[in-house]
Length: 212
Ligand SMILES: [Zn+2]
Image (cartoon, rainbow, N blue to C red; front, side, top):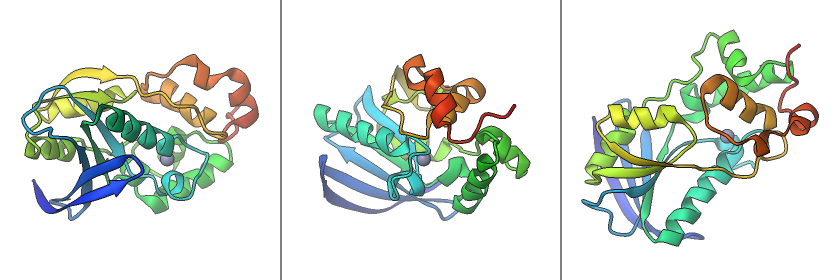
């Protein structure tokens, strides 16, 4: 289902990692950033992270993807052990162009879920089977998963990976992300604290205006 295609040491601001590239059967390339000797270990600190070009490269403040990724790398670096699996599932799987189309609809007041539906696209097309296969290739028997998203926990379990613990993964919300995060919590089942979603933030700074 996946093929380990390339591998190298990669020095980063978070220290040295082992970088592995996997190709899935659809031709997409995903990356595993591994720190420490995790082979055969259980309770490995792990983040399954989906690509976000606007947030991670262009510093968009509409979402919290970059701070979530950085936090995962920081935690792994501090522990000197763990893995980030970086899935090329831009826009929760709908692709970059469709994500930007959805942003356009959000300018007019739709939230992330409604915008996708207006485009005839699913809320979340991500499939965690490939991530689970990558973990199996790394001979990891169980993970402590850094996520606020119960779908990811279930996705890995369904893929045959034991999630021994869910580790809360909260970062400071960027300027325009309050409404986006509120939608994640209220419509997509994410487990988020109230602090990130202060009513004032949502009203004043919302990524789109809340529909009447
Ligand atoms: Zn993002």
